[in-house]
Structures are given as C-alpha cells and as structure tokens.
Image (tube, rainbow, N blue to C red; front, side, top):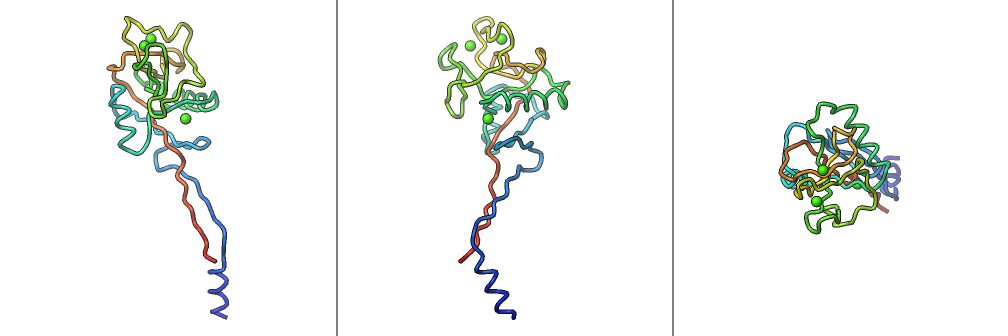
Amino acid sequence: MFRIYLLSIFSLTGVLSQSSCPHGWLKNDNSCYLFVTHVDNDWTESEYFCHMIGSKLVEIETEKENNFLKNHARSEHQHAKSGFWIGGTDAVVEGEWIWITSQAKFSYDDWADDFPDDYEGNEDCAHLWSGVNYSWNDSNCDERMNFICEKPLDEILIIGRK
Ligand SMILES: [Ca+2]
Ligand SMILES: [Ca+2]
Ligand SMILES: [Ca+2]
C-alpha cells in the first residue's frame, strides 16, 4: 500500500506555476513595482538603485500600466515631492525619448499639456509629476525625488517527475 502511494507521487508529471511579487512590491499584470519613497535620488542614482535590486527604473508601455501607477501615486503618495522618476530619457538625442534599460523608443506617452518643454535646455529625464496629477513632465536629471522600480513577476516552477 505504501509503495503504491510513493509510485503515485513520482508518476506525477506536469508543471505547477505560481507567480508572486516580493514583499513590499505591488503586482500588476506581469510586473512587480516598488515605489521607493524613503529616499530622494537624482535620476541616475534612481536607475542604479533599481538595477542593484534586480529591477529597472519603470518603463511604461501602456495606458493600463500608466493608470495603475498614477492611481497608486495619487492614493498613497500625495505628499511626494515632485513625484516619481520613471525610466524615460532624451539625454542621448534631444527630443528622442527612450526607455533607458530596454533602449526602446516610447510606444506610449502621457506627457502633460505643453510638455516635454526641455526648460532652459536642460531637462532630459521623465517623471510622474505630482503638480499635474501624475501625468509626465521632463525635468533636470539632477533633481532629487522618489522613483519607481519595475521587474517581471517571479516564476516559481514545480516540475513533476515521470
Ligand atoms: Ca512596464
Ligand atoms: Ca530634453
Ligand atoms: Ca519640463
């Protein structure tokens, strides 16, 4: 009886998949997001911070993703100074906005009216701006503010044996 029981366990096949975000991260679709609100960094430091914890400065590809981030920023972080750095920059070629980690051109954007304006010829980094209800603005990359990291959902695979 015992032997039969063991055999039945080891004859299991198939893959069980479980998706989750680490503690403190928010889940939305296939990504996990971390709103870093305990530190104000310039844009480059923000990107470095995200990379050091195995993620990237957030890249926003869809209106759905953007709305998720804006809604969270509005509801949880109304006090945030200036808002949150995101991974967009036009530091390589002025006026050509790309996501820094993937190097992809913007396929979607949510610039506030009249922005980006490259104020004083010195604004090459994008952020969710608290001043316009978290639509996007370009700002000086040396400004210090909170930021958002993004990484794929962790996949925990449990593979059965034949
Ligand atoms: Ca994304
Ligand atoms: Ca610029
Ligand atoms: Ca601006």
